Length: 115
Image (cartoon, rainbow, N blue to C red):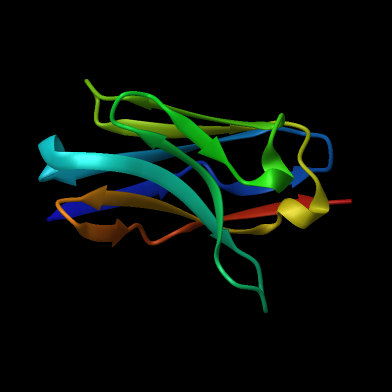
């Protein structure tokens, strides 16, 4: 079992920045991938970014060049640095972990970008 807690969401103006954090606890030694997804009202959940156990990263097309995912394995943390935020980035952001063939989700943190 893996327990995830996100933090760092909030309200920001377009063009601004936010940094999300995800704290992992539990069966953390077996984590394969950690990632961020988001879901806006009326839309499907979509990949924002993910990072493998060896540091390989993937990004959703809409955030490439603006967002950066990183992890601190020693602290069991993952981060999402979000720059040049746009109103369309408004969503609930979820931390996710793939571990031992199972997928775990955090409770989500709201990000709202005003125009």
